[in-house]
Image (cartoon, rainbow, N blue to C red):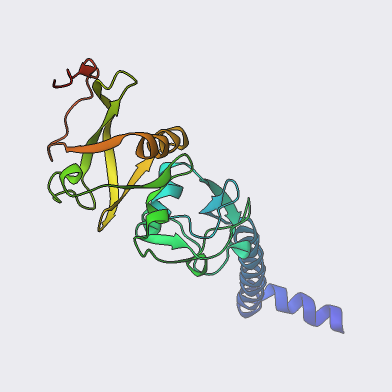
Length: 229
């Protein structure tokens, strides 16, 4: 009986249409299942390009120093592993300073940084130092040297023969700050030592450079001044 009804179902137009509808529904369900599986697979394999610390970044390191010294690298990280507010552009480091130590391989996030305060240490890279030298007003170009000035450093020395010697020590040094008679210069560790020695054993003078960038030149010859009689 069932076989007879089944054969009639297939032999009628309505039966054919019904079977077609059933097949279409099954195909649609199968397609939806496939698309969901494909979407999940794509999402599982999706990555985001983020900034990651290349080496230890200590608290207090300015974002501009991180950029200029290449303390970061670009890494493709699975989206599921991307930390909240991770930096995806180096421009996010501008005007920022690290507020905590960031370990090698850690993502750079907004939580790791805060606004820069423009302190002296924030204006130094790994190979620079801040050194303070005491100077009077004349040695500061009449007190006209200020933060951001570019100066040449001259030194006057009185030798054993009491014949004064004037010599240029450094060119184009950057002034970090001025506090009364104390001038803070940005220097290399070696320059810092030479400045400290010169300030203790001779007289330092600062010479203001023009605001327009000027090329470095060979130091002028040492000047020996004849002592008066």
